[in-house]
Length: 314
Image (cartoon, rainbow, N blue to C red):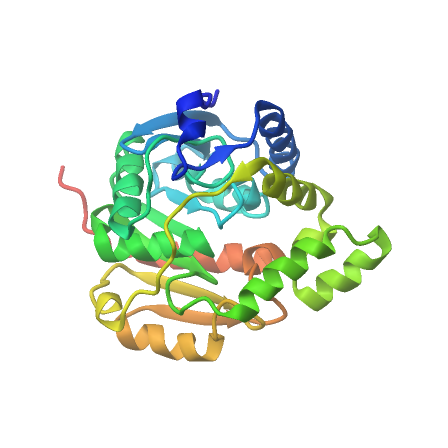
C-alpha cells in the first residue's frame, strides 16, 4: 500500500501532490488498468528516503538462476508513473529481476515530502532508494525525464551502476520549443474523436492516442496531480566526459526532444565506449513503438555490460 499524503504535504508549494483524494484514486485506477497490460508484479512496496516515500514494483523471472542476475531499475518519464513500462516488463522481467520506481514529484504512488530541485538532490534520492532496496549493482534504465535522472546519476553517483540505458533522454540538449508544442498538441489530440486518433497518432508519433488505457492515465494525471521536480538542465561536455559507466543511448529518428544525428555522434565521442543508435519509424517512445526490438537490444547490452563487471570475492 502507498503511504497516504498528509495535509501538510499538500500545503507545500514545492512538493508534488494530488489535488484531492478523489482524483488520486481515479488516477490510481487508470494506472492499474495500464499495469494489467504488462507483467504482474511479484512484489510492491515502499522505501523511505530523505525526500519522502518511494513506491517500487518488482518483477521476478521464473528461472531461479535468472533471479540472481544483476537487476534492472526502470525510471519513467515526466508526468507519468511506472505503469508506462507495460510493454517492457514482460521481456525484461523474464531474464532479470526488474524494479520499477515511481518518481517523487510526478504522479504515482510515491509520496514526496521535501523538495528535489537540484541535480545533486535527485542523485541523492535515487541512491537512497537503491540502498533501501538493498541493491548493489544495477542496470539503470530511464526514459525521457527518467533518462536525465539516469544520466545525472552516472555523473554524480555512479557507484551502484553496472550500466545506464537512456531512451530518448533529457539532459543532452536544452529542451526546445518544438518539444513543448508537441506535448501540448498531443494532449489536445487525446480529446479527438476515436476515428481520428490513429491518424493523429501517426502524425504526432504519439502512441498515447491509440492505447486507451495509456490515454486515460495521461489525461487523468494532468487533471489529478501538480508536478514538482528538478528541471532537467543539460549536462555540459565536461560533465559528460566524467561518465565511465557503460552507456547505451537509444534515440527515435523523429524525436523532437533531441537532434538524433547530432547526439549519436556526440555522446560516444564524449563518453568512451558508449553505444548510441537511432530507431527508425518512431519519435519519443521507441520502447513503446518498437518494444520487441528495443527490449532485445537493451537486454543484449546489459548482458555485455555484465561481462565487464568485476568478479565478486568469495
